[in-house]
Length: 90
Image 1 (cartoon, rainbow, N blue to C red):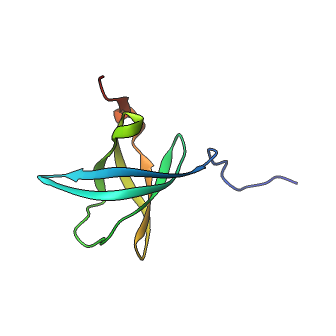
Image 2: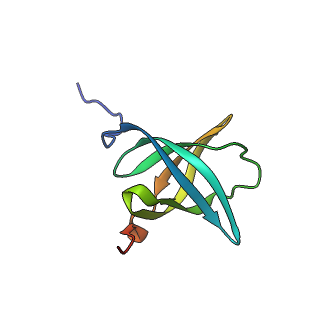
């Protein structure tokens, strides 16, 4: 029997402070789980956050473009746009 479910990258539970950046705005958030392909983040308020934005996790030296794949209450799931994945200098 063939399993038709998508294969997902392993997810790791974390509690990392991060910043959502878009246009001239920044919003503090908390990354709750992280994988090589995306993350679940917690935000104080979702209205106004666009479908695409930059996510910066400074403690991990990570800055990545994201697109929202789901939204629920104060949480959202994002997929990384891998062409834009890069480490911050330093």
